[in-house]
Image (tube, rainbow, N blue to C red; front, side, top):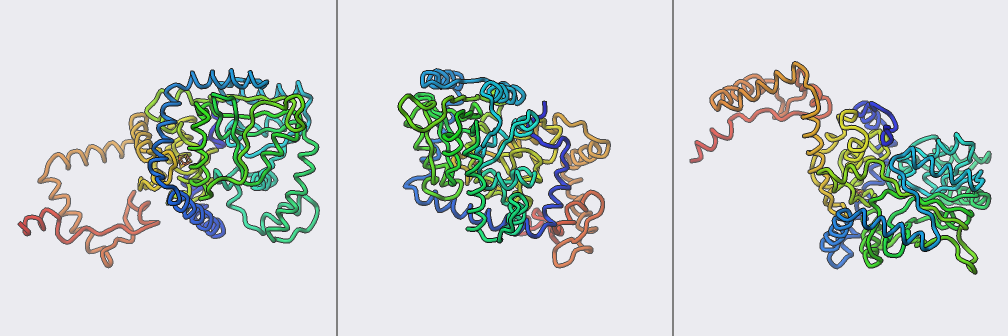
Amino acid sequence: MNTYARHEHHDFLNAAQQALADPPLQEALVRLTSTLMAGNRRGYAALADSDALRSHAKRIKEHTLAHLDRYLEQLEAAVQKNGGHVHWASNAEEARQIVLDIARKTNTRRIVKSKSMTSEEIHLNPALEAAGIEVTETDFGEFIIQLAGERPSHLVAPAVHHTRESIARILSKYSGETLPDEAPALAKAGRRLLREKFRQADMGISGVNFAVAETGTIVLISNEGNIRMTTTCPRIHVALMGIEKVLPRWIDLPVFLKLLARAATGQALSVYTTLLTGPRRPGETDGPEEFHLVLLDNGRSRVLATPFRESLQCIRCGACLNACPVYRRIGGHAYGGVYSGPIGSILTPLYDSVADHPHLPHASSLCGACQAACPVKINIPHMLIGLRELQTHEKSKGRWEKWAYHLSAAVLRRPWLYRLALRCARLVLRPLAHEGWLRRLPGPGAAWTTVRDFPAPASRAFREQWRQLR
Ligand code: SF4
């Protein structure tokens, strides 16, 4: 079942055009991505040797993925030893059913949730709401987009596409008050509205940033403190975790804690790092009565056996989004899937279908900025090229495309014909150029010149200049 992409056959080109024609969105994207990218560079620069630390993190991830079965079983045993319950979900439907069953058995009517891309991935909220359960997102950005009926548009800043004014409008409508469009007043209103939800909730649902196999500890990171409330106030805590989030040892954790916040925002450490090892124990005053860990596969073990395995090293920091010249212009919604940006352009086709997302592997200039920003140095450009290669094998080409390939093969195989073609192009195109650029190309070339100019052919080919130089 298609679980990654929200809309089948999402029209990426159309959505990208709409985003480009939206000035407030453009402004918000430039502001956010520039701030976070500057933070990313500052964060790495503050480390003694960020390059070595990132390589070390990558090696830990490579090792973990090579022995994933072993570490997951170790994690399961440790969580059970700590008094928690572990559930295995092979796909989104199973994961939803597991959460619904826990809710039914525990007589849950109200749920508070912290931000979790995994829950977005399995489309959990609609399933819970359909079962008559009230669900409230408690990350402020997620709360806003839940009220607006939207999807997150950034991994760490889900409501980036909203302004202070639109947030004031949404919160005012929900609360029935007239709230000013001032950040402190809006934050105060959000806190007041959410406090009540925490107090009433039967169950808290969270994601998992990391899980330590050795100790059965899950690690959650936030800047708002809502995760602590979500995981400790309600009597039941359910944590949803993609199976790739496991780390073998306790000693591996600081490596990722040092990198995640720096890569995402430039902070030395996020404001709250929550480490949870099982439910409340006898004599303890805080914490849930029951703790459930749901381990989600949903295509991950399939990807593990492909050349795209490296994508499972992702720690969802969002740095590649901020670095990407395409994401910076079109934002997250244009990608059509749960995950956006360069890593989303890999994950959505891989987990959903390469054929249904023909444009995503091409939504990149392959400049390498994503890999340079990535805390685990994931070679995103290489995988995007791999997906393009898959497309050329899978796609049945149209008559014109076949003809174009035959023609270019014929020209490239014959140097004399290549030289002749260059000369003809020069003769035809140079008179149409203005100051070295062509403003409009005919036929399929028009797609290029609607958004940028095309360089006119040089007056003399490189070979001619080379001959003369020698
Ligand atoms: S691919 Fe790298 S940079 Fe992008 S979200 Fe994942 S870890 Fe962060």
